[in-house]
Image (cartoon, rainbow, N blue to C red; front, side):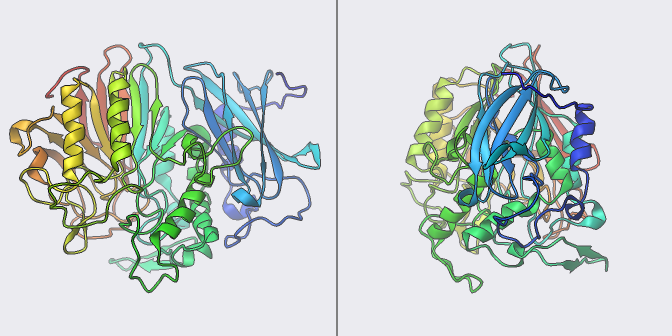
Length: 536
């Protein structure tokens, strides 16, 4: 429907930058350590934490907001930035049950179009009394083969004690990604470091002092629901990230640091920092906060309901996002259903890193996909040896270059399925290891040969420490034509540019181009892949 009183708006970029450019203090955000807004406040509801969109398709998308008090969420959309004609969407009532966050699902949107929206927060007792509208924009996915797709991906935010540094301008890499104006952002996990406290300052090897914005919830490891919520809220103190969220929709997955380093179901921690050591309890709280602070379709997001509690349609993080005839994105969850970390040398391992149900889902959905390219968003790499202590394996590869063992058996089954079903256009994207590289997997080099050649690209971190390269496992025949990594552990963002990747699919030729980039507008490596071609 049309709104009776459209709100004039300047240009799109000036709206986004002007509304979000102030510092946290100038915006009057809640006290940095506060767990939730107070119930009794004067004035109108405020949305100082910005807006986000997520899981956008050709005809729908999710819009997120957080209020500073009880409020009704209302979203208005328009085809133009003037908002002369709008459609209004009545969203959920935001309250303490979701930490005053909520999402609204927009349906029936036109495909391949720029959608302008603004979020209003209404007083529940007087719906005419609303706060200042918070604007945003996003593009819906195309439905025509000739329309290209371009997105960025990375992960690992505020890790190893490196948080929002006001001296460096905060998370500047998000501003650089925003200026590329991608169709969406694929966040490959470690969206927060709930197990990583952020100190007020850190002395760097060259004598400089790194300063962090700090909060009460980031002063210790997260154990309570309030502390997990505070971890997700921390990153939203950064102006660059809020501006990015208002312009670029996200597809988000999680990994280990949303809970605790290298966790697996059923684990009991041996860590003196924790009073609650049952990982299943911590993971349930983390999943609830994760669903509250990101608009994710499978975690209960939708018009008329608050952000997810991990009790949405099915509570899953794994899902497939259709981005038009050129691209499907398969989002994996290599954390929730895995077996215990071990040396990874077993000869029978049906659970693996995905769990049996998710592995079956992945094979089924890959078979159903008619997209030219199938991006498999993996929160951990396949052929890189990621250890958990001196003996156990955290990811898939365990360092034995022979036949598949342990979790490799499940990945081998997926790769075999892709080959035998003649599924073309699979590309694996990941983060996790805090350096960037490109791996080509080929059966002619592999101990296991029943698969078709494919590429895996690694990037990150976005705002965390850099780490040296890890070695390759020869089981699937990887070759690494490009690698950039520090030579020592935990190199700060002040010492090394942060890293992300860009993927561009040409609407005319269908070519997929991967660019591994670093902060400072530098392209480190480029690979062009041809549609339908095997062994490239």
